[in-house]
Image (cartoon, rainbow, N blue to C red; front, top):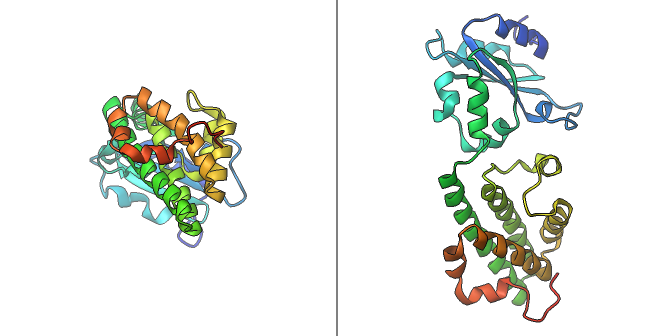
Length: 251
């Protein structure tokens, strides 16, 4: 087999498993999510090689093909030094195909799947502020008759909201493709999954102000319980725009 005849997934697994320099194989993406595989799904595979491996990460560079997407990394890189944050969710739900390190590959994945307390608090504070900013802009734009701007800001706010809610649960936010899959199997504590998804869909599609305000009331309660009073109180009188009107029905 060569560049013109690329390896199949099974053939590559056999090849890599026979190479003592390969210390781990980790499958990510749709193939690692039950029920998400389509005819277009390829196999996204991390090939973890020992740090002293000759040729390093380029070792298997010629074995990629239409159905096989390889990321070859050293063990040190896989431990975190060379792993981008946007891969965190992919690793959180990845499947281990090979672990020659007595469970060390599994421990690395478990560590990536869970934010520590400090980063969860820091990240959730930042996402809460970003969410409040987009929400406030949306409500003000609606008030001022700027319908498109209001809808765009509302849609932006849903991205920040989801980042916030997952950070509060010390989890990386799933990619949009896997949001419903993730929540169906691992709901966010204290949130009704169906109601949350309906609210996210409605706000993203319409920018409905009452729906945004009703959702913010729930978020504010959750965020204050998590110790984020300072972030919220910094918004001062603008909180009145974000909250449901006093005596109103909400959304």
